Amino acid sequence: MSEPLIRRDRVFDFMVPKAVDGLDLSHGTVLYMEDVSVSFDGFKAINGLNFYVEAGELRAVIGPNGAGKTTMMDIITGKTRPDKGSCWFGQRHNLLRMDEPEIAQAGIGRKFQKPTVFEFHTVFENLELAMAGRKSVWPTLIARLSGEQRDRIEEVLSIIGLETESKQMAGSLSHGQKQWLEIGMLLMQNPLLLLVDEPAAGMTHQEMDRTVELLTSLAGEHSVVVVEHDMDFVRALNSRVTVLHQGSVLAEGNMDQVQNDPQVIEVYLGE
Amino acid sequence: MFLLRILQGDRGGQAFMLALIATLVAVPVMASLPSDHPLFISSYTVTLLGKYLTYALLAVAVDLVWGYLGILSLGHAAFFALGGYAMGMYLMRQIGDRGVYGNPELPDFMVFLNWQELPWFWYGMDQFWFAMIMVMLVPGLLAFVFGWFAFRSRVTGVYLSIITQALTYALMLAFFRNEMGFGGNNGLTDFKDILGFNLQSDETRMGLFIASGVALALGYLACRAIVKSRLGKVAVAIRDAEDRTRFVGYKVENVKLAIFTFSAVLAGIAGALYVPQVGIINPSEFQPLNSIEVVVWVAMGGRATLYGAVIGALGVNYAKTWFTGALPDAWLFALGALFVFVTLLLPRGIAGLFRRKGGKA
Image (cartoon, rainbow over all chains, first blue to last red):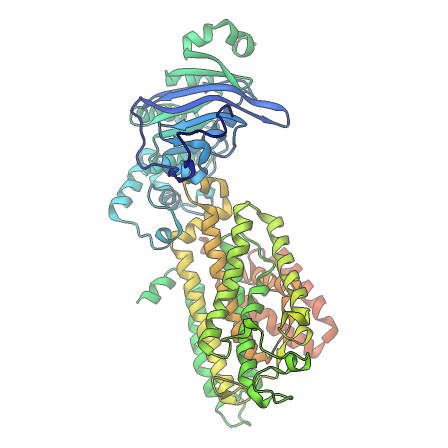
């Protein structure tokens, strides 16, 4: 850390509440990652990464295998702690001081690369569990589903097209349906920032089109960061694209700019 | 009404609850029959049944954390034994000056060790209410502290099981020592009465049997209520996809801690009801083998059903009583064979037989 050990203006740091209610997005940026580095056994997975996401923005992140895309998401969601750098959600939430549930409650939702749903719960229950609200032990024990909440779940069910499967065990869904269910769980959390890791894997073309439609419609109200390998899918998103390479940003811009960037062609697209 | 709602959709639980109520009514009637009547039940059998019921409660507690939360605790007998010791301390103090040495203040083993005064942790144990609080508090507190460290450092799976096993083993070694002040190797025994009722009398034994049945029913309903609540669904979510649950925003450690502690308290209550019926508590109750046996009951009955745990506990213990009477040397082989048989042919336990068609867990 480059910060001095003692700062005279911040003596009682530990007394500052970790997560102040209400996000401060007054500068229009949802996520700041600055000079972030992390290495695993000497391998630099992320190397001096600077990455910003604007409020309401849809952003695609591409990069060859091992470029650090998933590690970047791990850092944002609190699963991995970086060796150095800073990572802020809005102006007030220091993500490096929060654990996974706190970050999720603050408003960052994540979809895993491998679809992960609660297999022994019904589709409906999966959405119920993901629903935004108080999630500590006692409120969860006495929680009752209100009519309003039920309506919200029905609404999300229709968005993800799983109304008829509502009472089915999530474990019995197809791969593509699980992807959709996981996206639906993200919607139930109502996060400000959605991190979506490879949403199109295992989907048919029609399903892919619907996913693109859904993600584009979410942008605006939410910020969405999509990591994807499928170039057609990224092109269809029609958004700003960030190319990661060896743990740092190689290029940024729209799809055409990025595709014509000689560096990008060299490391990735041109092969 | 409330109770009925808890059991809604739990067919096995409904059947079990009816059977339990029927037993609690029938046994006192059958025990009051003349002793040459074919349906007569001796007070020995009543106590045996009462003992089984406390085992069943312990099995339900284990099923709650293993079946629904995915924590394979191989140390739950430790919480059972601690509850038992708390009850044993109360019963020891009730002996008063009727002990072999006739010391009104000190239990026999302390006189034997030449102790002059009661250790501080025996204070208050002559009060029933205080002892009952300790029955729940001591196992609960141990589970809380243990869980606090274990879950916070994210120890899971086999490693957690091994640590729970070490916990009960460490307690066994500690309780074996005379300096601990719990009677060492011999434990606590020679109890005379509980709340003024003679422990040898048929009426007291019947009372303890009924208390065990009621405790089992209430414990079952409490576990069922947890399982049915959203917290129970979160527990299953943790069991199946712990990381996902975290990223959805639940503090996994706190959920585990709460349910694990509750389960330990239930185990403690079971132990407290067990001790006056068997008349002794000693460190062998902390044996790792005991905890493993409980897990075997649950696996045989069927995980994640609660009533399966009851079936397993009753079935295996009945078989054990029968075998150790008829073929004493063959019991461990029979237990092993039963376990292999159930794992291979009935992966969902005996309860799995009843819900082939149902499907929903």
